[in-house]
Length: 114
Length: 115
Image (cartoon, rainbow over the protein chains, first blue to last red):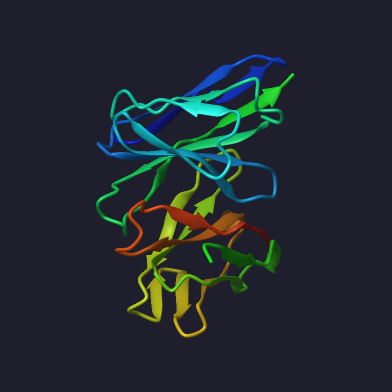
């Protein structure tokens, strides 16, 4: 079955540590997105990529980095520069050349600073 | 102008009642308005979507009402059930002028259906 897989489901980070969240999709979608969700808040865009080897900053990119070396994969690194990383992180993908299509989401990664 | 304002922030409805969630936008270039449903600890999933060429779209117990002149759209859940308890997000996307095809999200509504 096609879909988006995020791993791990839970992740714990120590102060000053970089961690990488995985996002893999087998939907053959060109566009992929990373969102951050805090309790009681909506989805805030961190980074997005419309094509392999290209990505753009979203609204809250500071302290995060991404890569897009393969169409299927869009990993997110939460760096030590992100001072408040505890949140629920969601990866999504869609077909960019047709605006009115569904965005598919993974099951999320809950990151906690310990 | 890129914002989508969603209300209420939370909503409690009795089983069998009608749940109504509202969204408003400013950007007249938006031409795709989806609603997503999110259960705790899960990613959002598309529930229903509408284009501005129609004023209403119904799928089962879920209906989107769209008012283009007021720049508002709403989700109605008829005969609300405890299984509908979730967070609902409205969103909007630009048309041919929006080359990024990004969804602009509302802040979400936490819906609780009381048995």
